[in-house]
Amino acid sequence: MIEQTKFNDNEIKKILKEKYNLEVKAITKLNRGSANLFKIETQKAKYILKEFQSKYKEKEIEKEIHVINHLKSKNLPVPEYLQNIDKTYIFNHQGNICLLEKYIEGYTLEKNTGDHQQLKESAKYLALIIDALEDYPYDDLWNCNLNKYSDIEAFNQSIQKYKDLIEQSKGDKYENIITKDLQDKIKMIQKIITKDFTQTKNLTVKATHGDYNVLQFIYENGKIKAIIDFASAAKLPVVWEIIRSYSYLDKECQNGKINIPNLIDYIKEYLKYSELNEYDLKYMPFIYLTQLLNSTYGYKQYLQNHNEELLKFGIERTNYCRNFLETSDKISKKLLKLTL
Image (cartoon, rainbow, N blue to C red):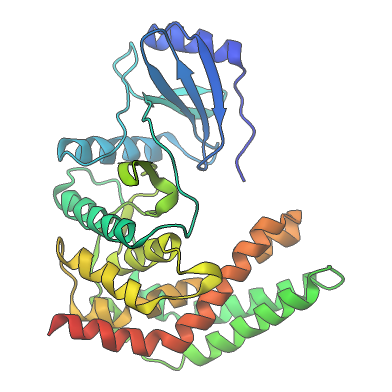
């Protein structure tokens, strides 16, 4: 959940005058993303003031600036951050890191509303971003440990977490739904840990966005105008970013459904601009499945604060698990044919 802002309008006007010499005419609070965002209007231009959640530290935000500036130098469609009068990008307001960037005219799409052309465009830009980060000069990206995808202990810990959540759900109005879903996830974990995932050590791990999905795209006339929010940039299995971004965008993927032909086309488009090895193609559906199976997200948060939207999100992810468990072998075989 987004933290409540520590700004009021008068503070914003004062700070932006002091730090950027801007005369603010209008301020509009925007509701998108994980940060608090404010549209700032002056007589001559528009900006976005971004107030990060308190959990983000200065080094993490500096990383985002490094990534965005690097991608900007490669002519990719990313935001442009402004330096303040101290020639720095970051300032602190009551413990929260803040940035100012140029406003990008456009609109966002809802999850799972993308058409086939927008799928192809998304795949292309993901490949271009990953390739552009090949020569990223900073050593500030977290590196994924591939062992987690075959860690039996982690699976067993997830089983115990689900058992605990089932106990916590007793008496809740959604007890039956939560219990059924989490019992199913336990059964799916018990089934998938019998598979041999030792070859996942050969997956391609590269620097990437880290949270690449349709909610991070700004559109104009149906096309991507900008890709935002690189705070989660990290070295990750490329295939995780590919299949997750597909599942967020395709309008045929409602409530955890998978459109296999569309997924194949998404990956084919990616392969026009970047490479994947045979292990990437073989294990792609399993990587996403194992990540979702080990995640309590949605159920845990609902039982803490009774936010039904989060429960809905958890249910959707469980439906993805059911569908991927049923279709993963089929998808893998189809993907491996792309190497022929």
